[in-house]
Length: 470
Ligand code: GLU
Image (cartoon, rainbow, N blue to C red; front, side):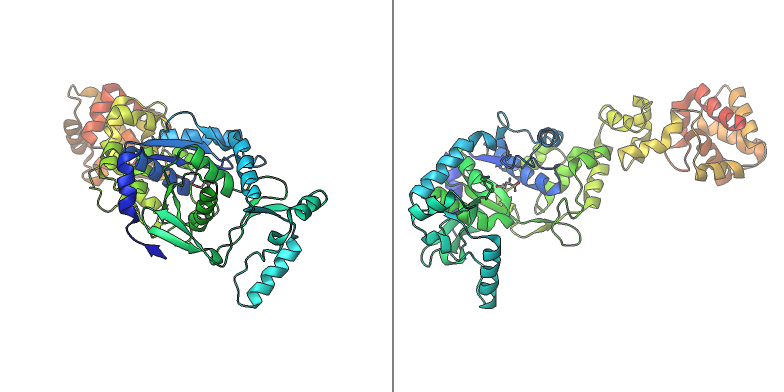
């Protein structure tokens, strides 16, 4: 089906024409991971080649499009650092051009009204299948004269179809990854472009807008490949420019099923609420199918440098949430305290810079900070595990520890620990664990000497006193 060599042509074109890509979501829901992949690839492609990246809301389905999703999608893109050029575009603003395109096609006899009822279509499909034929539209209404079509349209419900199916001829989709993908017109259907309620399906407005917006490269999932054939045919019929398509493999879940809202993929909003560092999502997503990107390419600039448009995979790729969270942890450990603090503050509002510095190395996720709240709040209740350690401490342990702490002029961890050891006879775990829990609220965490330095004279006393009071 493919004939190689197109990508070379594609490349020479890129050298002379500014690349323009777009992300074209329908504002009918929140951004999910599949959208992120498409948006990211279009963004990377444009930015890598010094081109422009446009944002276009495909809002022609007025009944399902909502302004709140427009805002949410914009916010998610910005959060991910995927900035677009110019103002966001709205497909509904081009309604006049869509209508004109349909009229022009109808005039040439390339679009026609179809009056077949759903019952008739189902019957035809069944008949075709029983004969071992593909369930395509029979072409019945294509044979109607203009007069009859017009006349029936006054009293009957109808859709508009494109007259693509033909025993002869072919449609060539120029795909930067696959070369020319050639469709025989005998294998293509006559797709519906206007529904019986008068609204356009995705095919025509999407193709017309690409031409109007000057899109040179459309990167999208390979589930659109047949749509591209319809759209190339349509654009060529109207003498409009056809973008080079880049059909990337689909994003699958770990179970191998298509990752989508319906199959439980996370929305970007959910991930943001979970405290994810946006760059972790960008890292994990960019690296899918890009094994050549060095491990230490940690910034977006590094990723762009390493991104190779020819590396985008034609085969499907599997998403891993674990991998994304591993990147989160890695990036978290690379953040300086100033950048880390706002992330920590979402779960521990009382956090300060020194607290961020103290616990940075112990975090896998930013909200792990929550378990160290006792470091900034002396009276926070202990969890079950910590309480069990406190309960198991030797009789009078905390009284002695507090007296020794308050009576000493040396406020370091080591001398205090040695003094407690000598006075109580406790050692090893029985010595440091009750102290760790008293001060931090958890059984593991930063070095105790750093904890003691952070809390200071007052801080350590307050936490021991809290336990004695409780
Ligand atoms: N609105 C279409 C979608 O969300 C756009 C597809 C495309 O990228 O052309 O699937």
